[in-house]
Length: 54
View 1 (cartoon, one colour):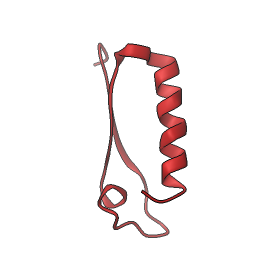
View 2 (cartoon, rainbow, N blue to C red; view 1 turned 30 degrees about the horizontal axis):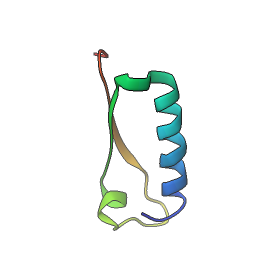
View 3 (cartoon, rainbow, N blue to C red; view 1 turned 180 degrees about the vertical axis):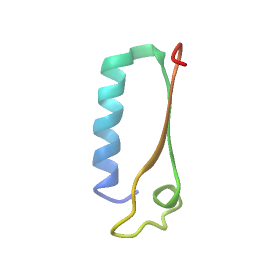
View 4 (cartoon, helix red, strand yellow; view 1 turned 135 degrees about the vertical axis):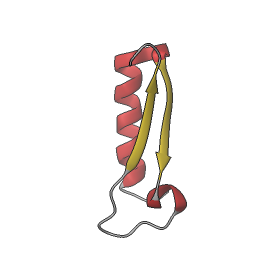
């Protein structure tokens, strides 16, 4: 995965771990960034799964 996406995801993961601890189940990246087909104007598609949240 290319910068700046790697840095953004690393910071997000650290913040989620700090906030939710063991309740953080998964951080999933999908879409063009995950496939390596991103462009300069691509967004970052993510799915966050946290235990106990609706």
